[in-house]
Length: 260
Image: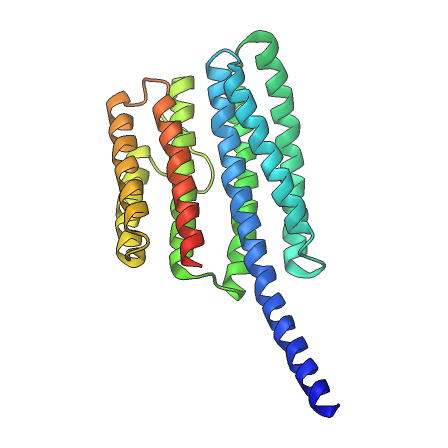
């Protein structure tokens, strides 16, 4: 009987240990999805407003918002008191401010076919606040419960790529010479150069027999995306860039799953 109790106690401790590791990992995963979908929603709004209320991008935007809400609720379910909970309160506040402005702008575009560029920029600033709050929460959780370094590389690349695409969407549809979203306050050329270098680093770190094809596919699609971006030079509507963005981010998430 005592032996069984000892085994049971050991099993309970092991399960508790696994749960303590699982929750931070899950929380970081939800925060990562919130980072990506919040930035992506801006990209799709710029396309929606810049293309005279194109419903394709309105549907994409609504899908982003639904995915963000799902990740937010899941993240809130993992925290109860303490610093993570405080972060979630700030994120939710910024999210509500962003959503209120976005809904108002969405109606204007639906009714008028377009929106004043200054209004789009005001929405971008609210999006920046939201992105910064999520990134701060992610960094604080990761500081205590560090994810796999290669997983973190893949996640950082996904966020950087989404920032590149969103900035390009703003440039291509609004005719702005410069527009910054999220945490990356750099030009498109600087961001693209960073992505190329970081992707090379990730390939060196993560490459093995099982990841070779996926990494080659990511590199190939990035080459096509960057070539398209350079060809259009901010003057065209970035249909291809958004398509490549979606595929690369999906592949980076696949890679993350293979590494963990």
